[in-house]
Image (cartoon, rainbow, N blue to C red; front, side, top):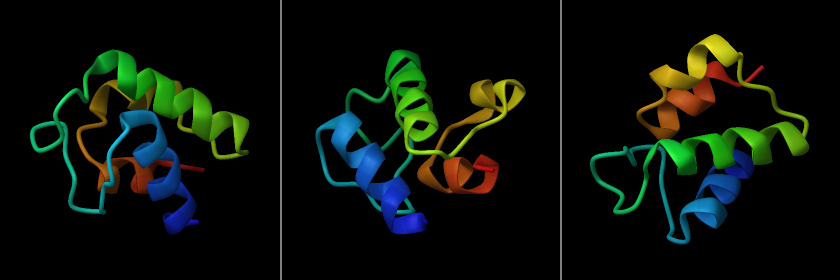
Length: 67
């Protein structure tokens, strides 16, 4: 699952990411991109609880919040 998350996040952000990537280290990763990532994950069958979306600051956060 982790590799699928990284693939989705990389695709949305338009740049390769790793588990260590954060909103501070990836140019262009803003709140709109976070919402696009969450929607893409949902389309792939991986849900992020709505109350956790505002807490996403890194790929590791996404991996922790995906259900």
